[in-house]
Length: 487
Image (cartoon, rainbow, N blue to C red; front, side, top):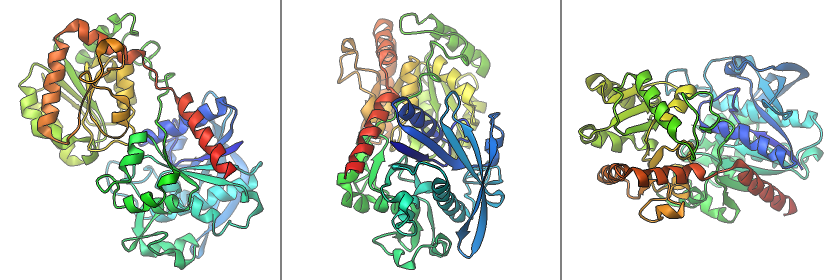
C-alpha cells in the first residue's frame, strides 16, 4: 500500500504544536508495519535551521494560483533515523518567511494564508504525479490540507494516477478551520458553484476544513471521545451539522507517544534517569528543576502546566482560583506562550511571589522534559482537548495529571475515585463540569492524596507502567485505509 502523508509541520523540520510530533511518528510506525509512505510539507525558513541534510531535487513545476503561475521547487530529505522520504515544497514568496502561519511573536495570521495553502495543496498533487507509484491513500491533516480531497474530485478527477486514490482527513483541532473571505475562491481554480453551503461556503466565507470534511472518503479525529464530541453543538464549532451528515465515516483513533523521545529511563535532557522500579531519580530531577527555576528546594508538591496560553486550555479557571492556590503549600511552574492576557497574568505573579511561581513564557523543548521529570502534579483543565499529549508524557514521568474529563483526556486519564489504585488503571484525577470551584476541589483532593506517600507512589507507578504506543494507532489507521480502499 502506498500512502502519502500531508502535513503543514513535521518534527524536527518545523513545529508550532503537537501536529508536528504526530506527523513525524505516524509515518514511522506505518512504515514499520510494511506501508510504503512518503511525507510532504512546505519548505519554510524554519526548515533550513533544523541541522538536517536536505537536498534540492531536479523537480520544478508551476501551479496556477488564480491568474498567476507560481513556481514550485522541490527539496528532499528523510525522517531522522529512517529512510522515509520527506519532500518539501518551496516558493520563496509563500514560504520564505520566519513564521509558519502567523507573524512571529504574535497571534496575527499572515494575510495570504489562503494563497499559501492553495499553493501547498496544488503543488503536493503535482508532485505526486511526478513520483511513482501513484498513491493508494492520501492522508490529510487539518485545514492546511483541506482542499486536497476537493481537487481530487474536481480538477484532478479524471487523472489516471488518482483513479483509485482515496483520502482521509484527520482533524487535530476543530477550532482551527482555515476561514477566508469569499474572494479567496478566485485563487483556488475551482468552479464558483462550489461556493455554496453544501460545499465550501461557510457563513459567507470559504472554509478549508469544511471542504476536507465534505470531500474526503473518511474522517478521523485523535481520540474516540472527541469524535463524538465534535458532532454536538457544544463542541462542533458550527460544523456539527456537517459532521453529523458524515457520522458513519468518522472514526476516533487515539494518539500515542514516542517513547524514544519521552521516557525517563533514557531521557538525556533530565538531571537523572529513573523508572517505576527505582524512583530515586525523580527526586533528583525535582531538586534540579527547583534550582534551575530559582525556587526554594522545599519538599512541597510542584504543580506544573506546559501549554499553549489560549482559552482552550482552561486558563481562565486557573486564573480564577490562583490566589487560593497560592495560599496552599505548593509551588507552581508554567511553560508556554500565547495570548497576552495569560502571559501577563502569570509573569506578574512570578514577580510578586517568586518563591512560589515560575512563569516561563517561551517554547522550550528541553525545559518541557525537565518539568515533566521534576514536577509532582500536571494541571490540564482544558475546555476541550482533541487528544492531548502532555498528560501521556506526565504519567510516563510519574507526574500525576489533574484533567477535565473531555476528549482525549477522558480516554486516557482514569480517576482514583472510579478506578482502584491497586488495580493499576487509576493514573490521575479528573473533574467533568467546566467550573473553577470543581477544579480547585480536585486539586485539594489530589493534594490530600499526595500526603499518603505509599498510595501516591502506587498511583505514580500505575501511570508509568502504562504504554500508549503509536504502533496500536498505526494499526488502526491501516485497517481504515484498507476499509476505504475496499469500498
